[in-house]
Image (cartoon, rainbow, N blue to C red; front, side, top):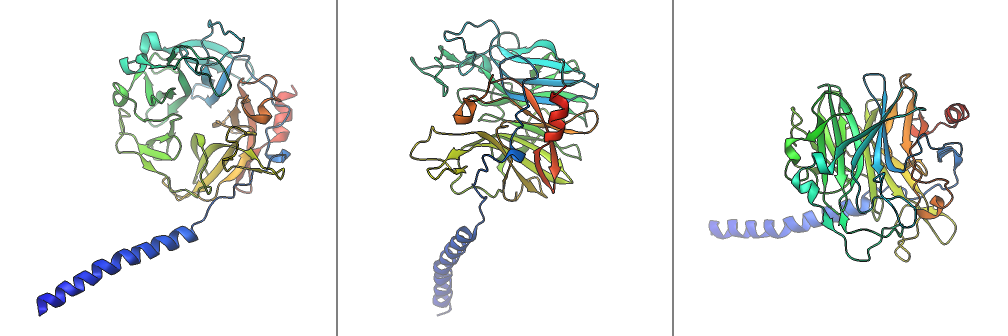
Length: 384
């Protein structure tokens, strides 16, 4: 009898528990908060000011700028091979390039080229040199004719790790070949650079657009495309843990997002991401994907979300820098804040830029706890 009662109680527990969990999940989903997908296109206070123009006449995407401990600014980004001949005259690196280039400046205006600081031919590991075949007749999203091999460095970022006084570069390969981290063997920003142990024979992250973040306590994290994070080992030789996903307040449904960058402001973590604004039939704009015409996009915008914890939950995203996507933030020698940008040629807004794919910097500021362009400082900097 007792055995039957125990079996019966266990049976009903097993039956009721899934129903309870299911009901709880349903409530969680129905009550879940989502970020507002409205894209405020036309809001001048949030848009990269018209006076912004290239600071360097070099074809570049995904511009990254930082201020080093030696009093110099350093600039890198996705570049095209300088000696390559392009059939239509428009540079690109959707298929291949030769590596990572670096520039430095004392004043953010005059830039000195430091050259190719990491190349496929001289510095890459076997898995990085290998590349991936391009299908015959393939074209880029910008309709560029592609060559025979995917083997390009995309979105390199140069970081000075203050706690260890070390220079690292994080970058990715095209063609779905993953991201990797390099370390300077000279203790100088110009390298030479070599792979850290964690990606000596494989990517450290399997997707594009990895970034690095050093917390106040010296912990260093790899942030990955576009919702993942993992702490590095204390000696920065590899990851100390598997990647985990940020707890976020997403859009509904979540569109394609890229260009991740993590920083802190007023003690809270700020997660910057890049998302395309999409025109709607009623004349407004949204960050939600247009299933009827997925190739129709307008501008490449930076959105921001805030959290008290590095893993989240991150609050609702808000549009911060319209037309300034895939950026990073840095402070200058006076402590004033800037954002990088590059005039993305894709999209309806991109057709109005002249030129496109050139590095530029945008003064930005925090106002009422939110990030936005600083038009006054932009006028002061570029008018001179």
